[in-house]
Length: 115
Image (cartoon, helix red, strand yellow):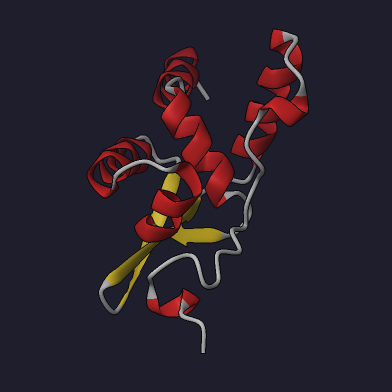
């Protein structure tokens, strides 16, 4: 990894909304409607942030029916975020919880419909 690629990675995750999205996805996967519920942000805004994360090679996606599910390409990204918390002197519990998300009954996607 070159200094340029490290800089690109750090720049891509530098926005608080992107960190929140990455933590919400966590070790699982999430569709945009999951991320809307978890972050309280609008679908268009989340999609824009996911596009930047995907362009930077941080998340990958798969399509299932009409839904697109996102997951981290490398789980070490979570470690990087947690190390940044430690370096900054913040507390770990100041961050949103790390996924995988369990939103059954709260999210309108087909995978979360209550039977």
